[in-house]
Length: 69
View 1 (spheres, one colour):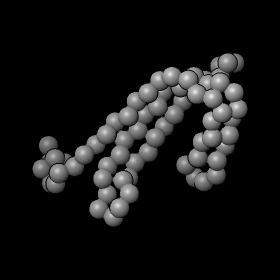
View 2: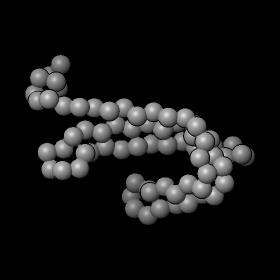
View 3: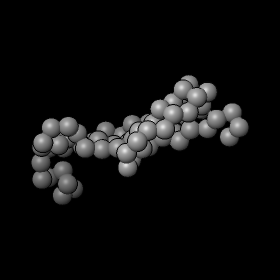
View 4: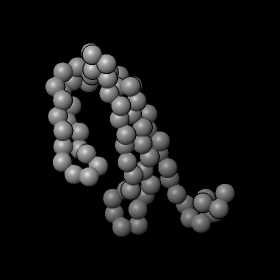
């Protein structure tokens, strides 16, 4: 409860499943990686908090499975 008593805050938990083709992912420590083909989204989740200095702070994590697992 202390968290909510300090100041008004918002938290958004995202979740999804489905399919996607030709994926380009930005890696956490820089760079991108691209995968071509059809992939199942096993999970997509994340959270974001508002920031006092502009853009929200947060992250997304995705797990994909290709036709070969």
